[in-house]
Image (tube, rainbow, N blue to C red; front, side, top):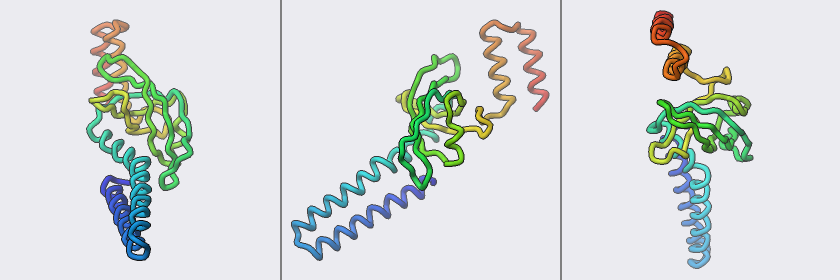
Length: 185
């Protein structure tokens, strides 16, 4: 569901709550109407706060977040579904690029029922990291093969660069293999 649709759902819920409250105020006494208006407003607020707000925050993070790789350490079903898609609790080992130290963080995305079985410990995924709070991450993609959903050449080049940086291969080996990978594009 895109942000526009989510916004429309939120607006529709707000209008529905307002109409129900208005009918209650007209039909019942003002005191009961005010109390029920507060109850309906509270229910709408709770739905927004617990279900829709996290989805909107994840969508925003996917647009402005910093890309990183991660490995799932633990995956739990929260028991919550949105449009029959499960919300899962993931414990991730985040591996930021460019020599950043790996760390653990949690994410609770709503995922497609078709992808839920792929979220197993040991599975590599792509995430987006909040630049202001690195513990806040959003699941960006899961590969259907269980690995990173990236260009294989990009992964091979990064692995090659990592080997070179660690001194496990020489400069000549690095250049030769790099050219070989780039020729294969």
